[in-house]
Length: 462
Image (cartoon, rainbow, N blue to C red; front, side, top):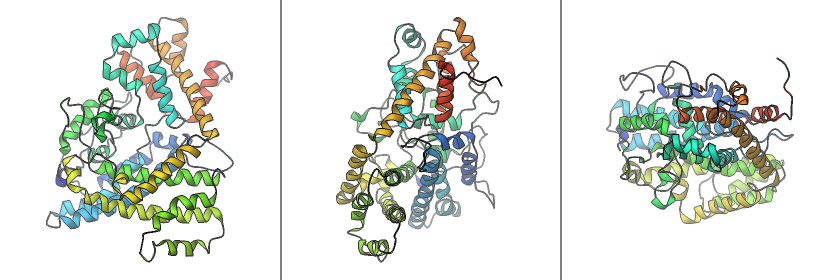
């Protein structure tokens, strides 16, 4: 891969055009950002669980606030890395320098903004609930799906992945006549796909490839991603043709998310009094031990903390300093691994590329979070609720799709909005429409619909 060919202003659903379209106000990648932030799919993230249940007396992060913060960090990472690329290749043309100095930041911010847009309600347990439903199907329903779906199509549901669903939401037209979905640039879309492989090739850590840890596109979006990869010069890796090298910009998108959730989840836990201020400081202040800069040394950080009285403000200050430190380090690491990035052979994320003593501190945060946050009682309760609600909705809707002749099926199918068409001609497409409908729900909408469909709540006449 080459830095010169890894970006384009070409969009999905539009005819091929010149690579550069001048706009003195909004470049192509700012338009991507605007299209995402004004979309209903993005707006619904405000009522999707990040980690802790919503809503509460203490406001914690939801998917929307998390995505906005990741976009902020991603913009900084894109700006820092872009400046370094432009400086290293100063002899390249004006368009090249303009993109890397000024526009890469918007690309990464846009990809970060959309990185969770495919996640279903109830956090990651929503993904697990969809997977479990299809994995545990038996009897006639299992036979119908096995007889009508390819192995890869079946895996799309048994290994449902929010990353793959994000690409689908952004590129699929959902019963509208205009093709291309949100019509984002190929550059932004490629920067979003962390695991560029099919469902049947993904979820396979034995390959040693970072691209196959999960999956990045459903069977229905194979032509979309294949075309994007061809246009940007992203090579296939492996013999199957189902796995691609990662686009280098993906590492920046991923790093922004990795940095944010590691510190933000702990900040939320502190606000909820799950962890103490001292515990938070013990996890993050050691990152500054070896720093010698005038504003990054531990001594300077502690001197500032001594003048902050509010515990929440103290945590916020350290969080801001830590994000700034990580942004600077990860932008440097990105350039240190330039050769591997362009050859598609960097098989670990940027955080794992930190020096061993610093990554050991990251691992310490990981272990603490799993033990004390992600298995906290209220988090487990919302995950169990997610299993029951999503599983219940899928049971009713899939039954109506696979057995349209039953008297109840016609009534159940009326619940599915017209943007998710049920044609009766393709089992795969019809099941996808059901999953599209459910995965797009907010937590509260899913709960409300589940109550009405199960008779817990009798709906009002409207």
